[in-house]
Image 1 (cartoon, rainbow, N blue to C red):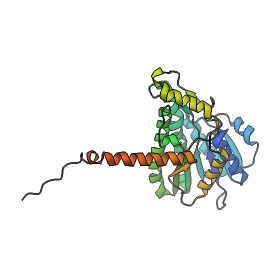
Image 2: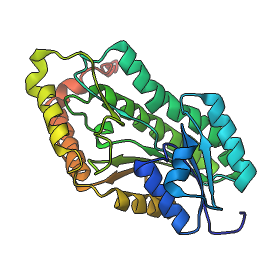
Image 3: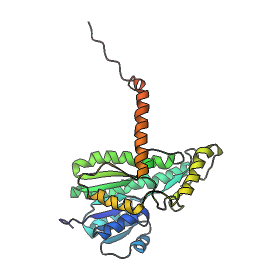
Image 4: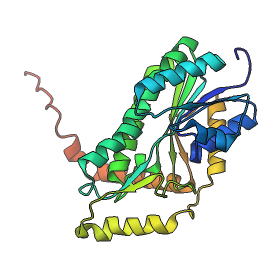
Length: 286
């Protein structure tokens, strides 16, 4: 592998959605792909047998499996150039409706699972002195929506982790990008990727109830093209100077711009109070 233009990808949640499409695009151009899923047979069923493909069992909640998968990847292909932390799922419901059990399970996959895999792969990239970590967040990881509070909080965590990682890893030759997709026409809003809270509180009917209706109505009608997102991820991986954040989808761009304007406007309105809490400057003696 050393000295070639081909990349070795390590992709979680690669049996469907963004993970599967990215694996397909990478294989089609001659790259090497370690495609992981809880059931590796679902990967080979979707991608077929391929000399450049290594399908591995990986439940991201199990750190030992992540370490083993990283070792198997290096044993097969010699290196890992791009890590795509894609595995995750959604939880739809008001913050108050989300039980401790539901939120804990969500974090186990979306946050702690991402950390497990990242910790397993980073020693490989540090030895190489190169690599690119791509963490799949969401437009909800930058700007929350009613009904998506618990889910958004996991993606806010991914954003913070990614920002810090980018600072820590840049001197070591490793890039980090957090990707913020908007609404894409995947199975994310299906029961296979989205869980609704068991509890429903009538007082949230106008906000969270409306969001549930919207999510059901927009399913498989979303504006984003998943195949184009996969192509964009390959372009991102090929960039000599990748961004720390990449917004994908016109809806994400619009939402991010709106939030930035809102934050700036609100901060300006409260600026006097915001800066009033510093220690008062000491008076110089006459």
